[in-house]
Length: 453
Ligand SMILES: Cc1cc2nc3c(=O)[nH]c(=O)nc-3n(C[C@H](O)[C@H](O)[C@H](O)COP(=O)(O)OP(=O)(O)OC[C@H]3O[C@@H](n4cnc5c(N)ncnc54)[C@H](O)[C@@H]3O)c2cc1C
Image (cartoon, rainbow, N blue to C red; front, top):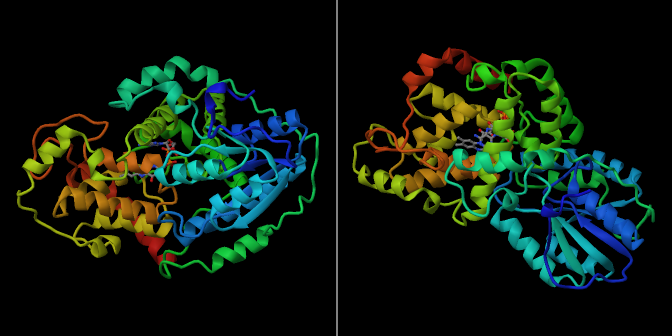
């Protein structure tokens, strides 16, 4: 059963006696533990219609690079195989989803969307639902606790959201996948579609960034995500609580790219982690559920999430008061992008982003704080951080990215004692990295990564 809090209406059109039920798979690119797909299967069976699952490749999606498209299409074959096994059709189209959905709605009984949090994709869903001639319903499938079920307002911090999540989370962790089979099976829907191979060829024509950064070290797909989870549980979880902040230890799960593309479910991950009874499980669930869903709360209730305007008033005030503090270094966006600063730790972090497609969490904080220190204004720092994060992080263009960037400016944090440039916003420096970690080990690892390219 899909929990009712996940389901909402997108238009006021009638359910039609059409030829099929359509599920547009966009945010939840997986066939397992996907409440939107489950709801689509149940709807198709209730209406005694076949189910068509549509996947659209949108050229020019936000700041997505070739590496993101590549990761995305790597997951397609597995999804289409699983969906076809359940008796539904899987079609792939290239182009503007609104137009494609509007056209397909003419023969549909009902349409199901998965849920979007970012403006751009919310707008696409709104327009597609308005133009469709049948009922459209959306299902929130990429969080453990649906955002509105946890809180009806923008939360101040993890401390204010945590008790609200904890009060209801067990209900959502009880979810068991049913893998409903489609009764009215369909093998060929007679709708033009790219094959998975053609989808791979299609994205080869997309603009590349440059010769180094075409690819990341991640391969997309559900099995890849499950493999990462398995390795994490077996080899890393026991050290997670004590070592997750240390950039010289590789104890993070590396699941964020898969979560970002919806290639694995946070509910599934949480259930697997809970089963381990590991002492680190609580710390991991704090990140996966409380921190991640705080980020979703932020983008859902703060329309300025990708702009400096979303920074808290106290932080904007203190940063403005320190605007004329002398800065020892200024770097242009190009110097930052090319990792050309005086700070070898920062350069290593930026190179990790460029080469690997994923920067260590602790270095992301340091990276952001230094960009504030080396930019003419906090506004410019915010812009360059969004640009680099969205363009190169495999998990970029995500609620956690905008919340993480805003955190560097004081969001979800508290005022600290006053410092040059930062005022009361928390400050970080290289001495801290040297004191806490064998940071040269990190520098060396990234150097080796560079040599390997
Ligand atoms: C400046 C900055 C930018 C960031 N940009 C992104 C981004 O674009 N996309 C992104 O997913 N995360 C971002 N984060 C948050 C965090 O760094 C990553 O989620 C984490 O490093 C992902 O690696 P992992 O999956 O190995 O994490 P793990 O430590 O294994 O954590 C498991 C999961 O918990 C969630 N999580 C962990 N830490 C955080 C956090 N601080 N905030 C929210 N969720 C968290 C993620 O979904 C992660 O996959 C950013 C943080 C900062 C400070």
